[in-house]
Length: 59
Ligand SMILES: [Zn+2]
Image 1 (cartoon, helix red, strand yellow):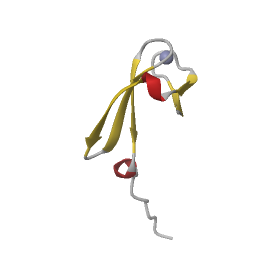
Image 2 (spheres, helix red, strand yellow):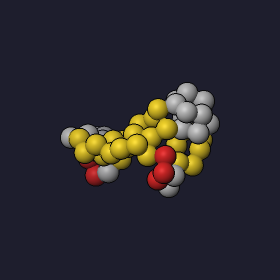
Image 3 (cartoon, protein in one colour):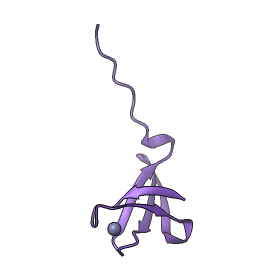
Image 4 (cartoon, helix red, strand yellow):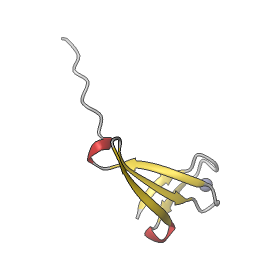
């Protein structure tokens, strides 16, 4: 279970595992495909590959 802000209805909803349609392991991380409560197809990129490297700034 995780929370997600839907790109269609703009609501922050809890997404349950039963709503997940699939998970793709890509070079950008794990892409979770699921349906929002409103019925819109959504994606979430997560996992180790989704982390962005820290940006270092000169002092
Ligand atoms: Zn929605």
